[in-house]
Image (cartoon, one colour):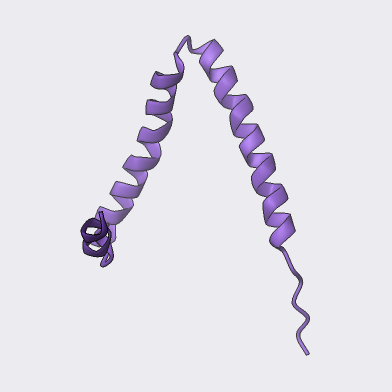
Length: 75
């Protein structure tokens, strides 16, 4: 029989460590690059958005979801 090893807590510890590391790096970048929080958040969000958009175009997929009409009609 295959024994399943629960990794939920390991993922949570890993996520907490990565969020703490990101927080330290953002504070360090804010002081070293002389940016305010809004500008830093913009640049930090722009790169992942471009990667997601580029990956979507390269795979010839769409970001459209079938649930968009359901969400819009509920509002």
